[in-house]
Length: 270
Image (tube, rainbow, N blue to C red; front, side, top):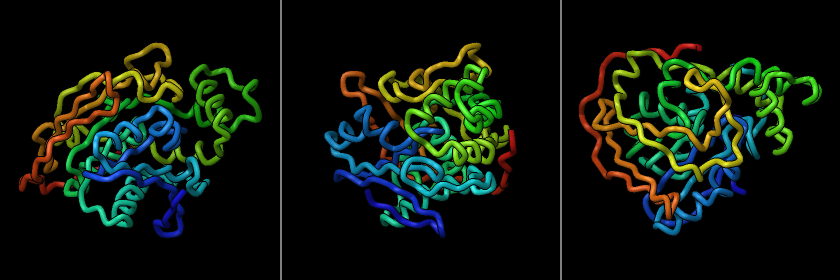
C-alpha cells in the first residue's frame, strides 16, 4: 500500500482507476478499507470511469499513530487530504467524506474551495453546527482496560468496533478529543444547501453514534448527505446515488465562482 509524508506524519492511501479524480475520506475509528473498499465504493466508482483516491486518516488504519490531541485539529487532518492531492499532483477533485471525513471535507470547502470541484457529505448534517456524534464517553471507552468496564452503550459500540479492527485505541481517543470542533453559524451561512438521504450500503460495518436527533445510537449507514448548492464557497454540487449501482455519483463540473467572503470565521471547540 503506498504512503507519503505530510511533514513527519506518514499517511497511507490508495490510488486506483483512471478518469476524473474523487477523493474519499473515511469516518472516525474506520479505515479506507472499511469505509470504501469493502462496501464496493472503490470498485463501483472505477467501473464508472473515475480515478479513486482514499486515505487512512492519521491515527487510523496504516497511517501514523499520534497520541497528542493537538495533532488532530480538524484543520490539520483536512490538511492531510490537501497534502495528498499535492503529492499526487491533483489540483482539484470531487471530495466525498463520511462523518469525521465529512467534517474534514467541510473544512476544506470553507478554507480551500479552489481544491474542490464538488463536495459530498455523508453521516452529518446540522451536527456540523450543533454537535452530536461520539463524545468523551467514547474516548473513555477506548481507553478502558477491557470492554467489560464500559457501560455507556455508544462507548461500547465504538470500543467493540475498535477491538474488532485491531485499531490503536489510544490514538483514536486522542483523535476524538482533538478533532471535535463545530462550525460557527457564520460558516454555516456560507454553506447553505439541501439534504438528501444517503444510500444504506455505504458503511454497514461502521459503528453507530448518538446525535441530538436520535435517542438511540444509529447506524452511520443511515446518515445524511448535504450538498453545497451554488454556495459562496466557490463551487456547486449535484450528486445522486443510484441504488442499483451504489457508488454511481453524478457530480457537476461547474467552474469555481469568483465570489468569496473576505471575512474569516473560526471553527470552535464543541
